Every structure is written in C-alpha cells, then in structure tokens.
Image 1 (tube, rainbow, N blue to C red):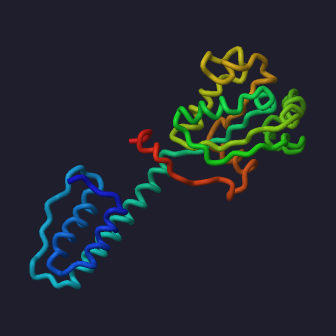
Image 2 (cartoon, rainbow, N blue to C red; image 1 turned 90 degrees about the vertical axis):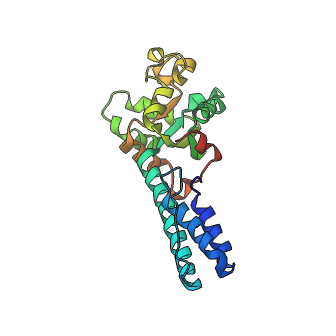
Image 3 (cartoon, rainbow, N blue to C red; image 1 turned 45 degrees about the vertical axis):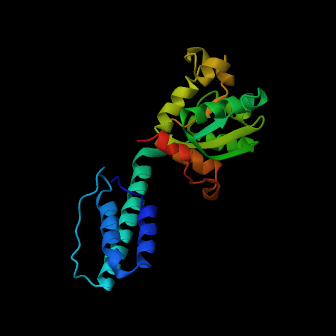
Length: 232
C-alpha cells in the first residue's frame, strides 16, 4: 500500500470518527500506516490491541492524523526553502517595443519556472539609478539609467530550482554577439546597449532587486499541478 498525502489521512480520520467502535481498529491501522510510511513506498503492518476502548482509538486516530499532517507540511516547507529560489527578470524598453514580451515569458514557462509576480512599469530616472546603484562609478552609468527609464519595462519574479543561475544562461552574455544561439540575447539582440533583458546575477542581488521592484503583497505563493512532473 503506497503512502497517502496528509489530506487523505485527515479525511480517513473524519470518516473513522463517525463509525462504530468495531471499525476503528482498521481505520487506526490505516492512518498510522500512512503516517509511518511518509518516506517509504510500502506501509508497515501494524496491529492494535482488541481490548482498546473507543476513546483510546479516537485518541490514536487524532494523534496519527495530526502528526502526519504536520510532517507533510514541514517537509513541503523544507523542500521550498532548500530547493526553490526566486529571481528578478526585467524586459527592458527595447524588448517591450520590439514585441518580445510573450516570447520571453514563454521561454521561462516552457523551462518549467513559475511566474509569481509581473507588472508593466515606466521607471523614473531616480528609480533606474537605484536599480543600477552598484554601477554608479562606471562611465556608462548615465546612459544605462537613461535607457532603462526611456519606456515601459516588464518587471517579473520567477521561481524554481536553480532559476537564478540558469535564468542567466537563458538570457545569455551581456554582449549579445558573445551570446550563444538559443539564448534570448543570442537570438534577438546585437548591441550591448540594447540587450533586451535583465536578470539577477546572484541570490543577494535577486533579493534586493525583488524588494526594490515589488511590494511583499505583490509576490504570490501558489502550487501548480505541473510541479509533480517537474520535481522528484
């Protein structure tokens, strides 16, 4: 018997609670099996003393259901914290003007990454300077911020395993002519000053850029049915 998810365990407990005492032992074994085999493909054989009272079975069932649900929730949170990350991706004014929004989004979606925030904004010069604050000592800083604030930008946050590092691979090298064919810049850009897209270059940068462009309430947390076909 394969392990059941916490939701199934709790439903089994609710059904069992309404049955007669004679059926509680079987339900108790089923619930305990589900809880015990969270990481095993086969449920262990469990036996329950026939002399237990109805109240004892009720306590057994409620405890097993609670422990299984708690373990399931904890493991899901642990998986997200350990393996999933978020990155900031922006389609620059040239990408917007050239009608590449759908193409770029489609590439991230086909890879399997999850879109958790998106908006179309026209950054001010001051805002662009905040975004490129780490480059303010560079001679091209003024031109860079002028360009970012020259038109609408599609700001996005994408989530998934390795999305920061691999997202940069999908984008391509800063200089489009140095980018491999198949990358976004390699396929659609020529000049470094018109390289279509921006992506966070590391975890700390991603955290700072997401906080700059989005309010916490604008970031969504949700599950997709396709996740089970993407992650083991």
